[in-house]
Image (cartoon, rainbow, N blue to C red; front, side, top):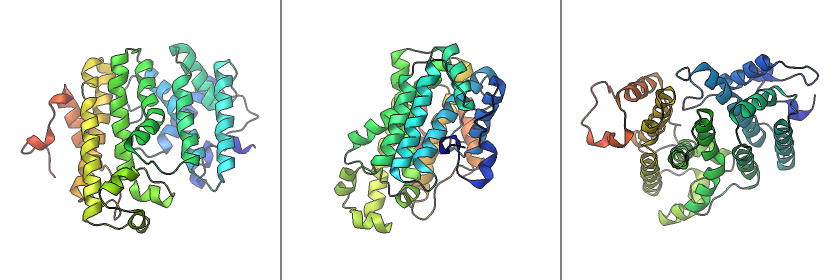
Length: 322
């Protein structure tokens, strides 16, 4: 079996390895993509059961394409040249998929998805560009540099979801970009410790300099007033970006609306979690627990236009037990 056929790297996920000599049916291929979606932990809903089934399988196909590529860039004990080779092979398979050729179950499902929904190849290529960038770049000097990364790593996902639901309006794309960028940033602040262990720094160096939090402190995981100031700044800026896209759910139909609200509230909940633990992401990674998911669902059902949701101005929501 070629290394490019090894989808994931954990022993317990060996059931997701494929047989390159086997001819997978379309149904088997979509099931395979669903398995990848179910295997990976995510903060935010990925093709949740709130979505119509026929749409859910298409999102799972795109997620599987992205997830496998992300694992090539991140997981396992590989040198950079091996990671780049795997990603280039994945991009070659993507091009062949658009030309009507697919043997891998992810691309069999993806071929049906992009053909049925007339999905352009560019957003999928942008994702691969971001994953390749992860292999060769581990620092971002400015916030604009980081936004450029998010443009490829996060924003294409939201645009693809909108296309799946037959939305191609540029205004909706722009609102989605704000939400996806904010989600990516929230994940960065949540995973500060994990990323440092991978020798990756997503906090802009210019922000660290502004808060007098140097690389020596970063390398040692020093928690102090400077780091709190730094994280407070990033959290507040990220929350503002969430609000720039807050109108999006109110502009789509109900079959997508709740999913978008859950994602928006989920990202905001991560920011609140970081604040509640006084910005100490070195000690423990903030996670969404069952109680948090219940609150997110409740808010998603109650609030319509998220621009009017101002949590900090509320004394306390009646169902909030925190």
